[in-house]
Length: 83
Image 1 (cartoon, rainbow, N blue to C red):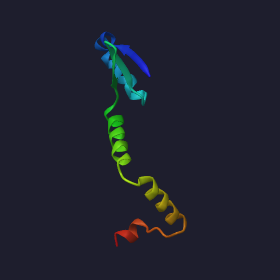
Image 2: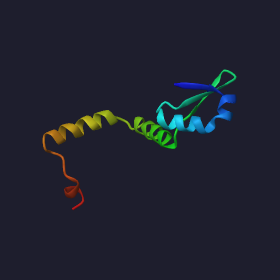
Image 3: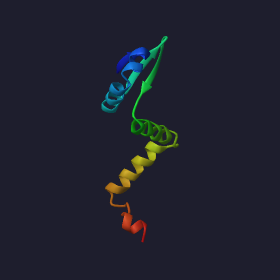
């Protein structure tokens, strides 16, 4: 992850925003032994969605079961579901 000091970030915010848009890890801004991460809004939303999914009980088992049903031809199409 690209790291800069807070003083550098103050002077070069446009550059850091561009870089954060290109690097999924974002940019670390370091001040007094603490780090802050600059990421795009899209990356933030993706992380929040992932965090929500992780909280779903038995999610991996549900996905595995759904894949098995699909492979056996037991799954319904979208048209069949919404008829």
